[in-house]
Amino acid sequence: MADRRKLHPALLWLSPRHLVIILQVYLLTLRAVSADVLSEDGAFSAGQSASSPAAAAARNIRYLLYDVNPPEGFNLRRDVYIRMASLVKTLRKHGDWVLVLPPWGRLYHWQSPDIHQVRIPWGEFFSVTSLQANVPVIEYEDFIAESGGPFVDMVLVLQNYAEGWTDGKWEEKVEERPCIERLMYSRDKQGYYRGWFWGYEETRGLNVTCISAQGHASILAPLLLQNITATSVMLDRAETVLHDQYAGKDYWDARRSMVFAKHLRIIGDEFRAKYLNSTDENDRTVYSEDWTRMKVEVQNFLITNRQKSEVGHSEGRSVPWSAPSTEGLHLGSPGGRAQPQRGRQKDSEPDEEAQAGQSICCY
Image (cartoon, rainbow, N blue to C red; front, side, top):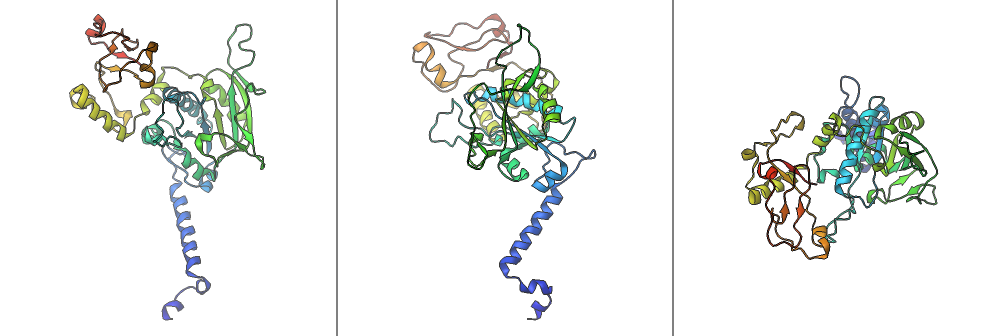
């Protein structure tokens, strides 16, 4: 009883369960306040997070989400990320925008029925920390936590112009238009829009409209900044817009920031050592976790995309699938593609440029 009399009188009326709830609220409040860290210019630096709906609202953060045409594969989706990163850089000149990474799932080449293939975060494939060194990004589930729930304020379905190019002349333009194709979203009884939303069935869209766009990614910036006030905006069919500056500095910064996740790099290093007699030390490609500080002297290399489901049915013939190796690949000229040998018993000789050690990038 002596100990109870030391407590604040108001607390004497509370049960242990209520005391626990009050303590949890107190700790969450401290976490939200401590996480709201500002850089010297008052903006979130890459990699920082508002961590709570209240903190996000206080910072006036806006979120850009996106998706692409469902049948598209891994490489196209990776390429569209670069376009969206460039768009966010443009938007951030006028406000605090964050790019939300669309979860992976249901890709055509992913045909293993015994592997979980939906709601896969980007961290399974790429280093999110490396991405954040280029532009502020967060995983989709972090967006849900920060924004207060699985809701997207505005979904813009990008499409081409129904009439194509006017008089054969290509020009950049964007405007709201009637939907050309049937919407992949349906309205429920509560008035919300349901759709694929990367396999998150609980996600809802508040508004959906179609936008005809013809041009580079940043042509959407005036629309997003001047005509739309929604906190979260999703660009569906984001592959519709083009790179702002293909092969320019922003392009390569985004591309270089797409460092594969460490657990995948370990697998790759083991493959190199076992099959290619290759190590970072021998090849002088020692990796730094901070890609912005890396300066690697380019060595001879070969990159090939050998897809089992496609190579195995080349020209209607059955091509045996063996352990990964260079057998069955013809080294073409620099900048060309590595093609599987079709029906040949022996590889043809590489051309002179390949023998000279030229880099050949095949994808």
